[in-house]
Image: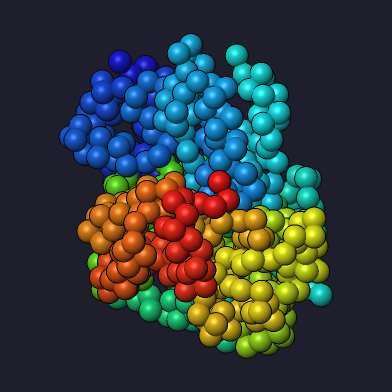
Length: 154
Length: 423
């Protein structure tokens, strides 16, 4: 399942640490980078590559918020639900996003375009409320601004 | 007022290259350090009175001083930068990471030298993508110019710095959990002792310091401890990056003398309250600090003064509420976050936090019952340091405890009115 490119990138990571297990988070991110999520088969092959058991790899995979163990949409929206965003209108924005995309937090739209997930404080408190799509941050959000931003993603 | 940590940071511009950083006086602290002994550097940082800027305020010199030194210590030793800034309302380390990566790198080299570490890691939260790009570029410049790698600047000292981008979890900000994460495990805290300075990453002596802490180190070495102490309004040395967000006119970050009052940050720098609304309360330094009331605004924002009023300095980045903000709803939001981010390792946190979050949800959405406040108070009493492995759950109790103390009648109104009167 893993491509040569994925294998090469994972093997390069193992050189940064004295133990192969330390490369697990990066290996998972590499797979996700190539496929959008981390399927069971990839967990098994990462384990084989690093000389670990699949359970060991999966125990790490299931812990971290950014590692997706289910197929996700083409674009991942992380909406910051933390205190400065809460004070400046998070609930209105969340409800707007859920209505607009017709999904609840943690779900993917029927057309596979967006997955909506809550995020820990994004560190954008001076531009709250904020969200992140595919690594890009958007601050000072209003429902109108959210509509403009969503239109940029196919 | 002298800006130290932010002197090279220009908003919305690229950070300084290695050459530009040197032209502004950068890497001079490193040159001086490499001509001193590690013990002398430790002594300087101790005398400077540098307290850890991650939120706990532990003396940096004392942390370094507990690392075994010399030939009898186990090697390799590790120096780790905690750049996992995920505290609700915090945003200060992002400024330093994005704005002046060479300052951080110089701080890492000197700090690593001071504890004789040969390997360093920057543990960066996944969401800080711009910081990652800028650090990768700055690290590569440092390697190409012999500021990193073998025999730095012709000295016998060698160091490698690796950037580790986290998989994302609030728990990773806790020092021991961060080490578990760096080893590729679930980010679960470890029982202490032994402390990481003796038995840390892969069982080797390890120091974990916050980004802002490390950024102070080159300046202390370059200008001396006395100069550093003179920057502050109080006896806790240096400057501090303060911030304000929420219901203020101009949210932002400002480097000011340590011990600047809450009032000065709020009224002079953040421009006061938004559109003439009234201050209700503020969280002074993240989600794990206790609420501060309007009558406490003249308190100095340093570790000792904030503790004296029953709160904490924390990260020094305040979240401000006005009279429209419901304290029950806000604390509900916070406790949902803490419950979600609990690593699940110990029972008071794994079971207690969801219970607290559900009780607050009931109060806020109209299912509150008499006795709910007592349930919350029960948790405040028992979910505390000594009953948990780490500070996550006890920290989560701070806003709840202070909200119950300051706004009890509003909690009672939620029961009586069958939900939040503001909804």
